Length: 234
Figure 1 (spheres, rainbow, N blue to C red):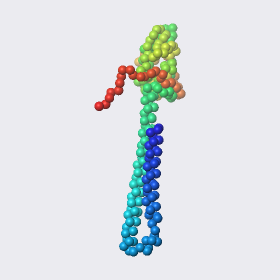
Figure 2 (cartoon, rainbow, N blue to C red; figure 1 turned 120 degrees about the vertical axis):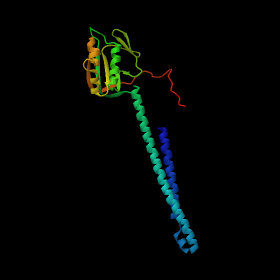
Figure 3 (cartoon, rainbow, N blue to C red; figure 1 turned 180 degrees about the horizontal axis):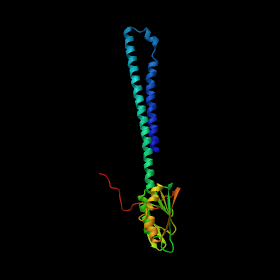
Figure 4 (cartoon, helix red, strand yellow; figure 1 turned 90 degrees about the horizontal axis):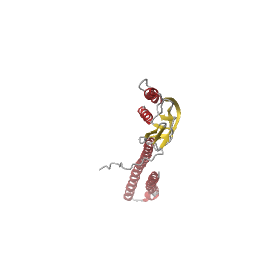
């Protein structure tokens, strides 16, 4: 924002300077003593008229140049604002994909529970996350823990799973923001859908609910890379 402000102030100052120079040219023309011209000899009068014409042409040329410069500066300002807006939008999208900002929207909520017959395990959650991503989920959380590309889901023991450094237990509430129809249909295909193939066929419990106002919190996990580095362009 500081850089943008400096550009606007600089452009404003240049426009003011050009306008002042142009006004000085016209002021010179306006202050020409017409009565004195009438008493001049013909030769002198011709010379003075030629000088006046030259000044007028110079002032007219300066006026056109000033208009062109003002138009150029206005375009520069517009482009600068458009570029700033585009960069801001790209940054927001990147932050959402990295899971570093809270998001809200419509989608589905899947609740998985342990029962007397079987436990929900890490594979169930891992498989569900992949199915939701394939169905177009834009943001996912499990028990309010944001799931990103770097999230690690591990089984610890019966009834206990760890997501990154946080232990979680049943019930597992999985929120997904995206097209509700795509998300739900991707999980409920007969026989080979997630709910039938992974949950019901293994005597596990799961339900799906559509919701219009789902909020998924930002990830609190540090995503600093220790070994990976950006490839430097030659």
